[in-house]
Length: 578
Image 1 (cartoon, rainbow, N blue to C red):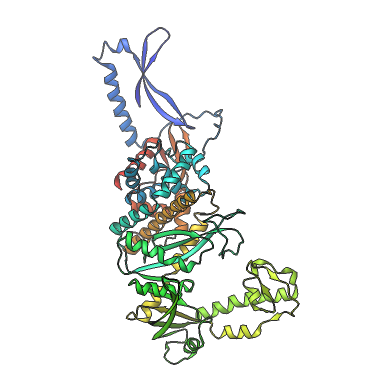
Image 2 (tube, rainbow, N blue to C red):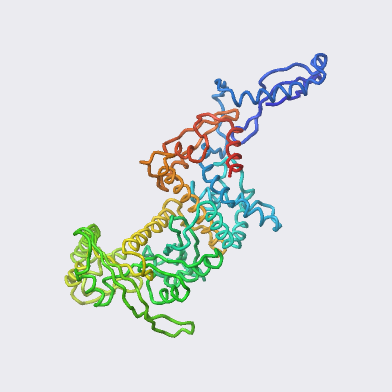
């Protein structure tokens, strides 16, 4: 509220108490009270403008604290403004708080000072990260629909695209900054690092240096980009890197480990990964670098001696549903030296094998579904498609599949491979893990390896909730920047999830509560409001997750009606408290 001087037709100045507010993106004003003509008020007050300015200030403060009903005048003939944003999101304040706690704003501000640019790198990065969580889409869509937030982040679409070059330049530095911030605020287990690889396809015909055709996780023929991701033992993203789609994922592990050890000043790292990374080169490298490893080991693809060890029931401990055993075994591995020559070394390796009744039932069920597909194909060959060529075809004797997953025509009679089915059935329920950690117990090794599910879940969140693809940029630097914003979005969500579940365990929240990343995203996405006129907003949604986050982060979002000023204050306080 403020004192407004209104010049009348007779030349006199009429003073009013006036409230300014924003409606449909436009600033409007409403006269609250007529104070009188200035010349008459000067006979009463030495300085009427200063006097009533103080009253306006007091009225504004009283309105902020006053819980009395507010009367709004709504005109039923009001038209919808073009491009009006119906809903605005305020749930992003939880992301904003974590973002500022990690000091990402400081990271960009320090670098902006040395750049001659006419846009705010930090503001645009916030837009890209928050939009990735709440409204995943293209960079163009994020810019055009930034009115869904209570801030203006990007001055132009050109600025958004220009900023991507800088994000690519600062990529590795920001990853290091984030690690240091997490280390300081939450602590980090330096010893364990979980690693896996996934890939993202591009709907393009021509390959380039990064987007290359290779083994696709989704069995697609399109060019792909592969991403290697490291997580810590808490499930928080540690580092990522991209590499060409035609490169073997086995070669991707060591470069990122080198960088993490150098940039993050880490000591010995024990890498936990699945059997896709279990190869002689990686084992030899870990040993030579003073690191360790915990890998799963294929049983069906192992040598006969190992298969016999697995099936030999002597040495197993436990009950019928779960039993395990281990041995320290001198294993000979083959690796490629720096000169490209094959060498052999012998290493002592702990081999842990266990049997799980649940695993056995799952394996039998999954195989039965694939066999049914194979049987249907034998009855109706025309029904065979590329999507089942990597599964059902493996149980059909006489069929051949080329590198593109297509059937190679053959005149051989086709039939179900019963011998292969019986051979595979022998190993149902058995699982093997190999490790350099000879002193760790079997249960420790199994428990550490089982946490690898966190990285699989993280990829799922990235692809489904954050919709990392489709990727609407094509330059390599812009692709790197895109994945950086996705990485930070993923990190913020994982931290929110971790803190919520820690609060439940510590008694701040109901210990029976369990929070998932997808549920948290859904709740903060739904915490929206709409303008009801004169700078007031009506909030439409809350749930148990929002109410729990209010307790954990000390942010009051319980009011149904708020002024724009109150909302701005909430956003400002989140940044100050961080």
